[in-house]
Every structure is written in C-alpha cells, then in structure tokens.
Image (cartoon, rainbow, N blue to C red):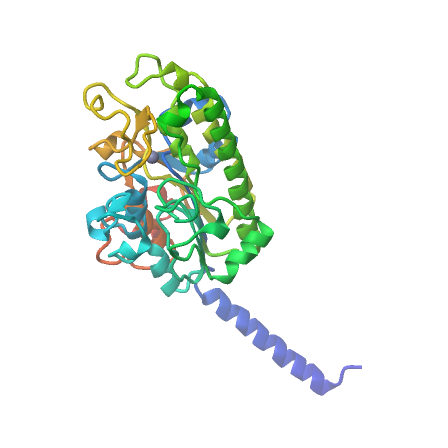
Length: 410
Ligand SMILES: [Zn+2]
C-alpha cells in the first residue's frame, strides 16, 4: 500500500516532470535532418524524357512532393570548381579550387581558402556525415564522419584525377574521418572503389570498341552497387543531422557515351552506336539508388538533389579545335562527345530538386532562379545559422511555404 508520504513524493515528481515537458515545448524545434544527394553532371535534357516515360519513379516522387528546376552554375564548370563553390558559396577564384589541377597539384581540401559548410555546421553542433562527395580529399575533421570521393588519390590513381582507387589503397592524405571508421567500412561494406572508373583512352578502344565499352560499363555497375551499400550502411549505423552523399559515374558516362545523333560533332559510330542506352541507363540506375536512400527519410527530413552542371553534345565551330580534350588535365585522350566546361556555365546548368517539411509542392522553378552559390546559405538557414559575410549566395526563399523562411530576400 502506498503511504501518504510516498504519494506526496510521487505528486511532486509528476509535477516536476510536467514542468520539464512544458519547458521542452518552449525550446526550439528539434534540428531538422538535411540529406543532400549530389550527382555529377545531371542533364535535364536527358532526365526529362526518362521522367515522362516513368523510368525515374523515385525522382518523380520527389518532384511531386517538392520543387525542381535548373541550377545555375559557375563559368566553365567542372566538378572541383563547382563543388567547392557549393561548399563555400564563394567563387572558384576566391575559394582557391579553380579546376582539377591548381598550380600543378590535383585539387584538394588543403587549397580551400574559404570556410566550407561542413566546418560551419560542425561548429554549430550540427552532426555532419559526408560520403563520396567530390573534392573532399583529404578529409577534414567534422562533428561526425567524412569519407572522401572523386579526386581521392590511391593505387592506380596516383594523381587522384578521374580514377577509382580501392578504399584500402588510398594514400597521400586521409580518405576517412574518423580514422577508425575506415576499417569499419572495409569490414562491413567491403573494400569498395572510391569515385568512378577512369574512361578508357583512344588507344585502348581502337579495334575493341564494344568489348572495352561493355567492360567499362560493367565496372560502373559494380562501383555503383558498392557505393549503394556504403550509403545504406552509413545511413543505418551513423545517422547524422546533415548528410551529403555523392555519385559520379553519371558524368563520366555522359562525356563519351552521350546518345548522340550521327550528325553531331565528334560522332564515331564505332563508339557511339555501341551502347546508346549507356548514358540514360545511368540515371535509371541512380533512381534505384535514390529509392534506397529515400527509405531513410522521415517527415522532418529535407532532401536536396543537386548537380554541379549538366552536359551537352560538342558543338560545331567552338569545339572543332579540341573535341578530344574535355578536362584539360585529363591525361588520357578519351574521345569525348559531350562536355560541360563551356565558357558560359548557364548553357550547362545543373539540376535541382528539393522536398521537405515546409518546401512547396509540385513547383517548377523557371529559368535559372537558384544557383550553386545558394546551396550553403540555404542549408545553414535551415539550422538557424546566419550566413557568413563572405558567402555570395542567397537563401532560396522562393522554395519555402512558410513566411518564417521567407525573411531573407534575394
Ligand atoms: Zn565531367
């Protein structure tokens, strides 16, 4: 039987618990989860017919639940240039990462002259998880984990440019933070390939076109399935407030296997007629990866799908002089048929998709309303972090429903 004293003690306890809850409700809402999925070179011209045909059901579900459009990029865009601008919301010249090779050295995080968003988020007690994101090598300490992506150096990828070292064979800097996570990943995910396979050179292709192309595409499939396991493992076992996962094989496939009409510059039936499905199939495969990632989200999660640029077929006149030379620093001479480093980046905008608790539904952004510069300010804004003075971008106020998010004006 409960004594009068213990009943009083219980009542006191109950009222203090109630008080605790009352105080809790006065506290700010829990931190949102933000999931960024980046795809190198996501080209809206190729996405659209696939969406119409119902071949990208997961991406379509994001469109229906959110906002989508083109993402304005920087001039002469390439992966390290644009990703570093996304990280810092400053120009490539200001952040120091102006291309694949800067001052004779492969672009790396030690070159960053402006504070990247992962550092700002970490300082503000937001937990950060990043995996396979380009231009994050060597990894930097964060309030969470960082596993590097494209431009990671390693065996058979000594310069780190556009090649795929195994995680255990990376060198020249840390590829995983914290260091102990590296063995954990190798044990639980496998010794996966970082980034994507280097494109075969013209010499390798000559006389063996379909054999080489099919073998390369098979390796791309292997790499994608390994990276899918990586994402699934990290999302399951290391959930973070802010998570950024990257994919890079799509862009490389587009460069030399863009499904191009015979009368375009650079067309070579021996190569370009072998697998006309190769490039569109990359997006169909990505859509499956996306489906797996979306299983991890809840009503409190914002999802951003972004690309650094699109990719377009080579053009008459301006590209006739250098049709083989896509990335200036690419040591092989892969016969590319599409590119993205046109002087005017607006000609190859990236793609943008967003959905979340207070993001507008089924809305298309017209023209080039949002930019790669806006990614960092918008994400910081979701965590209530003021935009640092050096950032040039704007909070994407037009994508939010609530007036609370509409405070910052373009
Ligand atoms: Zn590219």
